Image (cartoon, rainbow, N blue to C red; front, side, top):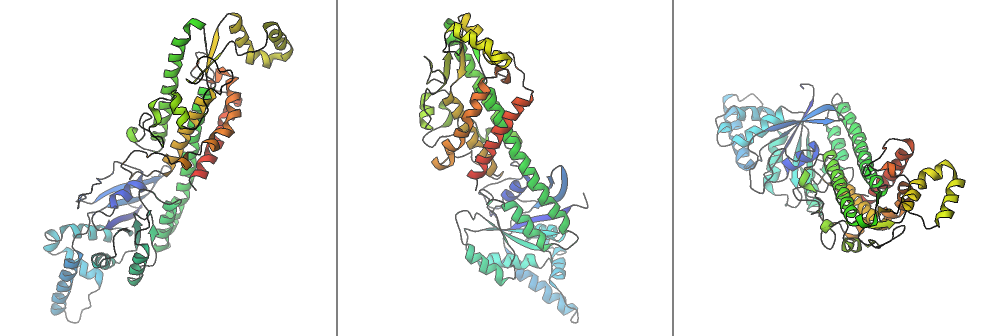
Amino acid sequence: MNDLLKFVVVGHTNVGKTSLLRTLLRDSKFGEVSDRPSTTRHVEGATLTVGGEQFATLFDTPGLEDASALLDYLEDLERIERQKHPNQRIDAPARLELFLGSIEARQRFEQEAKVIRQLLASDAGLYVIDAREPALAKYREELEVLSGCGKPLLPVVNFSATGGRLEEWENALARLNLHARAVFDTITPPIDGERHLYESLALLLDSKQRPALEQAVSALEKQNGKRRQSAALLVAELLVDCAAARHSVAPEAEEEAEAKLFVQVREREQKCVEALLDLYAFQADDARLHTLPLSEGRWGDDLFNPETLRALGIRVGSGMAAGALAGAGIDVMAGGLTLGTATAIGALVGGGAQTVRNYGSRLLNKLRGQNELTLSDSVLQVLAVRQGYLLQALAKRTHAATSRIPPPEEADVARSDITDPLQSFFKQARAYPEWSSLNEEHELEGESRDALVGKIASSLMAFSADATQ
């Protein structure tokens, strides 16, 4: 632990210091975020872990409140010390040490003293700036005090997504000889913003410290890539599970079987959502299906409601053999065959083992007078759109976000972009009911199933990557 790099986050009150730490630590429960001033009253630290390896300790600090008065007090201390020792020069760090030993550091300037002590004990500081605020004298005075610690200081420009006063801050920082900076919005960070922040910080460190941070940046990118791949595989598993689902029932039992399949699919989708939230270390209530919104309403009034399909621009009743329940999300197939029984038997005999495997049970069900229920193409498209959008939202969401995932913009959903490449995959999955955990008899391990899941995951990752550019 003593060998870990130590970085302290400093700045004025209510500029987003704790939000930055939540984002970097991927911990939405770290510290307290509030619009009230001086929410953080004590120094709080947490270990930053990447790829299972600890590489740094990050510290949150109270907001600086009265740097102007502190500067005046430091000048008084320096004047008194010079009177005592007229031939002794006092540099900025020595002046701060005098301050930390004074009674005022335990009373009037207690909060500032906590910040200075932690910066002196750290390898570098991240000075958080609210880009929406003008570069007032109080901020320049804070930087003057903190620069006196003699530690590398990287300004981090927060709340920059809407533009803010970036040019004004650039000029102000340059006048203080702070030319390196990082633009990093804690709510909507730019693509690769985290990597750029660490790279900027690495430039300020000495040659012995820099390799550890550079190694962490590389590990961080690998970890993010693995997380995106795991997320896409979770959704691909869901889609195969639902596409391959097939319930054989007597015609009089269709209504009960339909209700059962509805429940199974809803629960399976919710399980996928919970797994995705856990993968990205978000809370269970950050995205619930019944509150995940559409551009014109809410996602989940009902997955199987035709209005939900129409709201997503998906055709209703486009399944393989749309029957009485088409449009409600279920296709009814009388054995799944449109050929006459004799012709169908001849096709099976001439088709070999693969044909028998794929269609033999369906012919048997037809001869028994049973129908088969499967999810329609339209419902599979809804699942793909909902989960594809969720993949996008989670990839861009930070742990500083306090609201639930917002409604997608129409362009963000890009329905045809995600559903068109998946149509052939859905058809392939339908031919193998044993691939679905929603069926009583299933076999979820096998090269063919794994290959299909991988192809769907690749399509989802390509879609998510395009959407986040």
